[in-house]
Every structure is written in structure tokens, then in C-alpha cells.
Image (cartoon, rainbow, N blue to C red; front, side, top):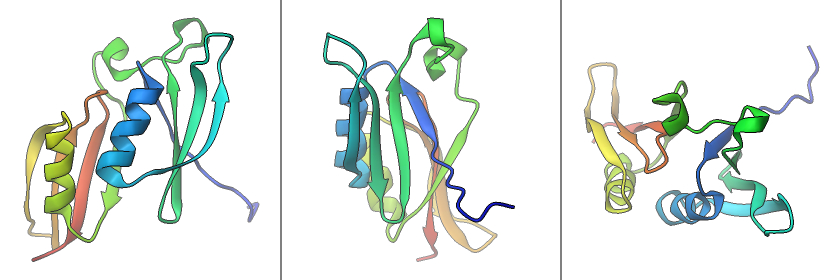
Length: 131
């Protein structure tokens, strides 16, 4: 196994700038890299960092096979974020257009968690310690 492997999820969205602003506002994601797609100035990729993790957003480009959840009829990936205050993060996500799918509650397995769908169709488990 190669020790220098890094997995970086890329979320395909209709509008990378709008998605970047959302992830900054609700998760505190810091933009660390941006590459333009073409002459129109739209980004082909925007990389974000949250704590020690990073992820990217890119626009849906069907000719490249880059399809957003709305193009697919739903998300095939479930992202999980472990935070100090899952209730606060869930509330911020909802205030910014996310939909609660499973309320954030104390769970039998010893975590406080719930699920939301963000405005771009991506599914998130928001989890943290019991309160």
C-alpha cells in the first residue's frame, strides 16, 4: 500500500460558486484552490478545507460524465461530518436551504446524529457526541 494516498471527494453541483458560499457559511469551509473552466470564468474545481479534511466542488458537465444529484435523480453518496455541535450545524444547513431527512437526535449507538439533503442534492450525516 502506498503511504501517500489522499482521497478527496468531489461534489458535482449546478453552481460551484453558490455551493462554495453555502459550504463556507454552514460548515466554515475554507477555499484553498480554484481553477477556471474556460473563458466565462466559471470554476472547473474549487477545493475546500474543513479541519484536516478537504473536498472539491465542480460544475455539472454532462459531456464529461459529471452529473449532479438532480441529473441522477438523487445522490449515490452519503457524506458524514463529525462536529462538536451537530444541532448547530444542522440548523445552519436548514437556514441555508437544506432539507432535514432524519432529525438530529441521540442515537442508540452512542452518537447524536441526523441526515440532511443540501440545496445541491448531496446527502449528509451530521454527527457528534451525545448531549
